[in-house]
Length: 393
Image (cartoon, rainbow, N blue to C red):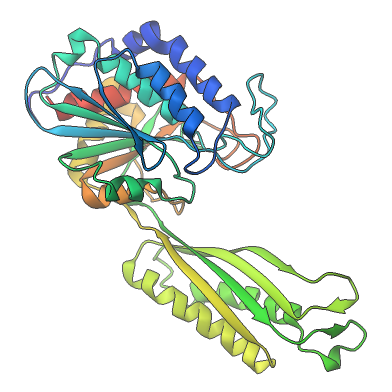
């Protein structure tokens, strides 16, 4: 890192010149949420917002992703700034005047804000007085399919991070004081894996259970027993979560079904534990079902890896946030989150940091009432812009 950049007035610059536009873009995206890789309309809104800037723009990355490149006045390293664009299959209950117009889809994880803040950062850095301070290149990544699709992995596979020296991303974070920034070195968010299990027995009349092998009874015992893997087989100081989030069986109240199904997620921070979990789940469930005369079939999917921050990138990020927001507003997080993030794929390729931006005491992420104070948006744009300026100082 070279001489420290000066950030006096940067937040005010963003707010005065682009604040209304950032908020308006966020609302347009929020009204028309899209899922997974199918973010064509969202991508078009981004293109409309950055099309007049001096950027090299590549479209159709990871289907509907965008990579926009800004060259500084001198050659130097390349820093990446990333935002996710996709929404969630949730029915919105915020009552906002710009609430989702599409039933069953909602921006309940702040990706509309992330995208708008990155557009704000791009517009800010393209101003001549700031662009001339860039000693290198900035790449802006607008990524689809964070919510389970692994769009970050696809961007990496398609070579979007080639030549990049560092990479940063922000995420709105309920529970963290409004406008504060927090991150930590090393593991910041968990690896997230998924399982589906079919429990097979022998169906029959609900009044004649002795003639059946009850798939519901087996499923109930499996759900209970699975909780002992973390509580009794994992070191209590090692973070791990095993959650059964779906269970289903049967067609009528008086019929014992032949098949039951459960599904869930496993969150770990340790690579060794992550590798061991599928075998333990299968062995435990199979032992229960075979003891009761049934069997199981397990489908286990390794999904997002641990989001692992580079210590030097974290140091830079906290230093920048402290100079931009005030030292008290730049916090090194004490604990990682057991939530997961596909920015992890980018961090496996390039050193960088994932940063939480506080939105205060609001409804949690992935809930139908998630909403936040939009005054945080110019602050996020300013932080992203400052991270680029300092990385290319």
